[in-house]
Length: 381
Image (tube, rainbow, N blue to C red):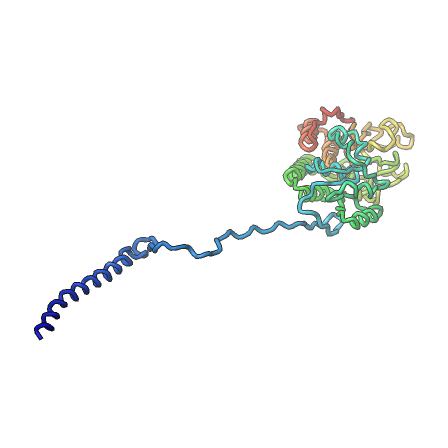
């Protein structure tokens, strides 16, 4: 019994020491997990023991939207045309189309061109490289094989029954044809805008449209307010000689109206219209203006025995439409200069504060890279 008691007395201190050690170990472990303050009170996340990170998919930014490979347009004939997102190779098939593309900033994208553009004194002066481009025919006949050979992204073409077979042949080869119809002021501006959008040259196209808008507003202010009964009546001699003229459906009609004149042939329709000498006498125009390509001269008109009773002839108000480098009455960008010139010719007093030659030089330099005078251009008064 004494031995048992002594044994108990000897073991008791050892058990107490063992319990203290166990408690100390447990307390130390508890302290290590709670020594960091809660994240909510510090604004920082609680630290965690280091450990190898589990495999996970890293966060990535959302993928950018894929750019469309094509764009869809409606051309001026109302056709739906699908084009590449980026258009870098262009074929033009008639001179006004070439001038529209260049003035809208697309000069460097032309890879094929009509032969009429290559014969233009003006175009060869402002764009000498045009002579080195493959020719694709002209309004008398287009060479589809040559167009296909230059691999264009788009072919700009005029509207007409003669172009329908060409359009079909091109599209059968996967080449889109885009019809332009710049036959009125609004259509002219729309054509420039469409070309700029297609070629990615919107800024230059907007400059052209702004120039048109500003110039037309100026003409409206200066000559548009002239009372109808005081406006001058204009007979424009057309392409077939003295007795052909401009109907109300041609672009030249809009040139006359924008310049503040009245087109005596406005009731006619179609293309250049044949008229009789008696009709011209009956119209009795105040002014006669002949297009450059009428195969006639100012003197021939003035001396025509059938026109001696006409006011324009009697008063010496017979003029040749400018200029010495291609005419300005075509449905193309420089026709705005034709409007300026005609307004200046019809109403010199109202237009006295407009420096005509300066305007013409600025226009040429802005849209064709060279001034009119530096090209050797002159105004045929």
